[in-house]
Image (cartoon, rainbow, N blue to C red; front, side, top):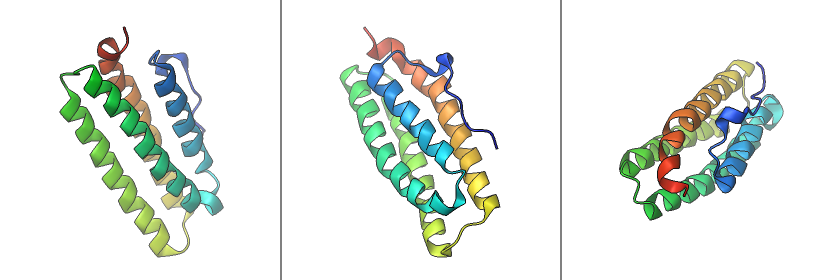
Length: 127
């Protein structure tokens, strides 16, 4: 599967958010190496929490009207990622198919989240 290439349309114009999005993309791209998938998923889990905290703080401060819905998307993603991490840890080894399906889901979720949900809040957060 092709790696995600950062495109200008993914930028929110909020420097800290864009920097974190780019790091998330690099983590997802690292899932290509099946031998490091478990480690990458652990790192992704930690980094996602940090990123979601930043976004939620910005949205709370901006009194974003769809804050609860956005936060709910974050919690749903965290639950999914936690389940995937548990599956990887329990299996002891990972298949190429499992790694690719997880990577494809992550790629789709992140890019859709950036292009839709995150772009929706930019006008409220960015002066």
